[in-house]
Amino acid sequence: MRLDRLLKALAWLTVGILRIPLSAPVPAWADEATRFVEVEIDFEHHWIHSVHPFLGAAVIDIDNDGRFEIFVGGGQDQPDALFAYRQGEFHNIVEGTGLSRTSATYGPKAIDMDADGDTDMVIARNDGVWLYTNDGHGHFAEQRIAVDLPPQSVPFDVAIGDVDRDGDPDLAIMAARQAPQLHIFRNDFEGRGASLALRLVGTTGNRDAIGARVTVETERLRRTKVVHAGSGFLSQHSKELLFGLGTSERVLKLTVDWPSGHSN
Ligand SMILES: [Ca+2]
Ligand SMILES: [Ca+2]
Ligand SMILES: [Ca+2]
Image 1: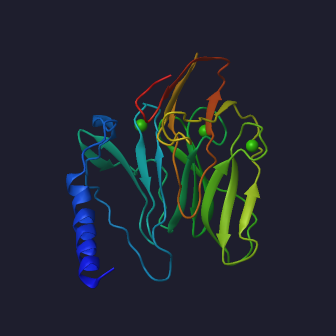
Image 2: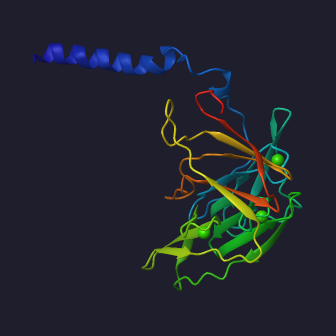
């Protein structure tokens, strides 16, 4: 190709690339529910060179009102934050929840560890892995999990999956710097409630059903979860949605709102 033709082609490509985000039509499937609006959150991460930077956030409904809150991990000497979206603004409501510490947070995970129907949190911090048990009203009891990690290793993140297929969530902890780096811990919580595991397969939208919203209703409770992709630092939960149902005996209704807009 002659040089002038090559330059013309490059110029056309450049213009084309620049124009794409400005002029591309909104796809037909992108209705109001799938467009994004930027809303500022009042949170600036403290990062110092002696610890690793901010790595994690989690979406959790702390008080079972069907509206999700957002947990944001803090840096060294910085409290974690928990944002509730009310009247078009995010408000930090972490105070009084028992969720915050000032050690650097690497990987927060929202999961009902004891399957009592209230979503708990497991948080990997630079001083260990911590369990926060939810009382169902958004107040959490803190307990350091006795995981046996090699000395000098740092728990960078926690991924959740039912490894032994008994219905409760087990933990995969990535503790970098020392081999072995991956540690699996089985959940043997005594007296746990009933549980339901769902694996969604999309047929008209994305096959992993990422973005699908599932609501389970029993004779005692109503819980909603969303299928997420990626979680924290270099980790990913299993794609099953694990519902803790407490003392429920029957699922009365199960609704799936697919990202395509369809419902079942
Ligand atoms: Ca809520
Ligand atoms: Ca729980
Ligand atoms: Ca299990």
